[in-house]
Length: 278
Image (tube, rainbow, N blue to C red; front, side):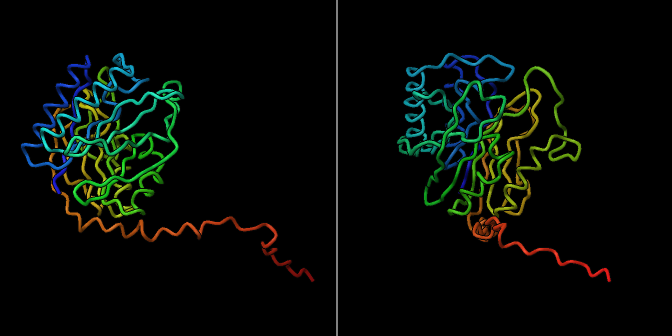
């Protein structure tokens, strides 16, 4: 299966953001990709960061979904689109999944919201699997994949061969741009990518914005924990890679045994034997 990970720069307008999505979908299609994933909350942009978020109401939400669904159908490429979803309870950070026919399969909400995002988003409460061309996959959004590994395992134990991880780390304003992937002295994010794949024996596809000072690269990690490929830091583009579905066995995820995590009843605890002091 050919997958594509799209890493655009921050959009300065809704039209610019839509233009980038259309262009990257076209590029992914030209390279034979079956599915393309965009970063977290790409439209209108992730709130609480050091850049201005675009105006976004119900009208803009519908406009974005209709436009991207059309381009997915024209390009014949399934699309995972990070954006906002407006609800009566508040704004949700979600990833919509649109198939190659331009039909919306559904969406995954960000359920573990970072503390810095609490003022802007309300968390979701459900998780789900998706399927494209016979391959099951899950979505874990940014903070979830970094700090809550159970969000990835949830999908893996249910048959996901790959988990897509749209995220945002870094800044366009200040910071240090890494020069080596997974460097021991660098941020922990790329090490976490390795763990999410190895602890489940599945692929992990992590997709960042193209930022001047990225703290993690847009990367594809194999089920053995090897970084198969990544986009250069700060470089806008599309990473198209072949994944070998048969290698994503989910072996370690399948061995997860939640029944072995029951709390030991206090009444059944065995008292330590008394030492004979005579």
